[in-house]
Image 1 (cartoon, rainbow, N blue to C red):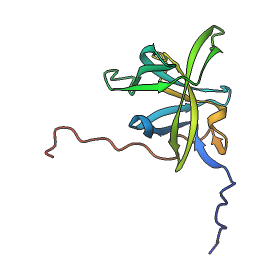
Image 2 (image 1 turned 90 degrees about the vertical axis):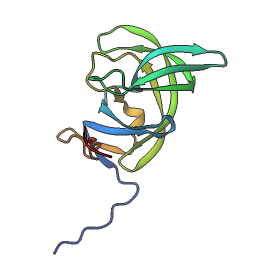
Image 3 (image 1 turned 180 degrees about the horizontal axis):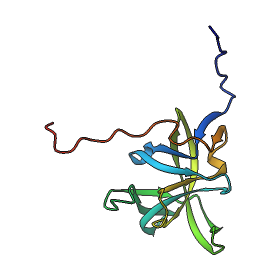
Length: 156
């Protein structure tokens, strides 16, 4: 029988190239995110983005590509406005907000640039700044599980 040492808290947590994350401050229990070590800042697909007085923004987090009506309205403080160069080479100005993310048992504060990603499969992109302490295994996907699907048409 082989006994392995307990994992130290300084060891990285292994994640796959796609993971489900939670944004608990916004009431989002699971959202599929693509891990992108080439991106510095994380990005989130939103709709109905509007700047509010007092350096705040309101927007809808679109939870599903297949069902765009599934959305969560959010109001957040603007951390900064930044210029981002997309993968196609175009520069655009984006609002950046901060929230808590939960992934693989870890919780941490991250920054998210707000953007329209309707052509993309994943509603969220996790960039390098959010990945500190994680080790990405590109051969794995949903290493920390998938959300359970609700049964349709069943009695409650």
